[in-house]
Image (cartoon, rainbow, N blue to C red; front, side, top):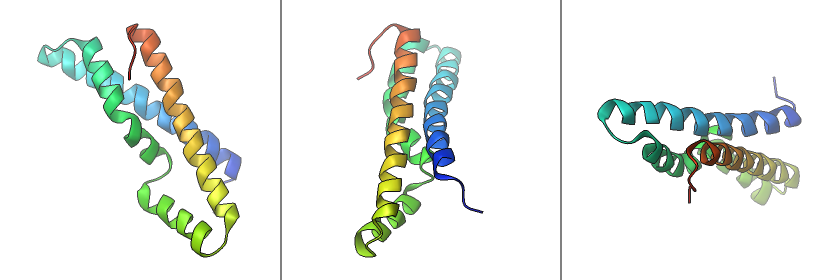
Amino acid sequence: MEENFITSVFACFFIAAGVMVGGTFIGSIAAFITGEPPFSAMIRIAHALKIWAIVAAIGGTFDAIENFQKGFLDGSTEQLVKQVCLVISAMTGVKVAITFIQWFVNEEIL
């Protein structure tokens, strides 16, 4: 059964934010255990997780490429617009998570 599009947009947002926040905080625990400074590790991990959070939120790269192909080659602009909206939603989730992490660490993540 196909998900409702609005449900998918919200899911992409929160999945991307969850990957960023969860990965960063769990990674900082690993840094603490190994003797590294946790806040510095959080900044490094958050920077490295940006693209992976977006990919995880949109369901992997192959589905996205297939939907872009349908939009361009088959003339289905609806699929193309939906996929762009999902990517923008995931990017927004990543930005919100980075803002939250910056607030927590009190340093800027580039």
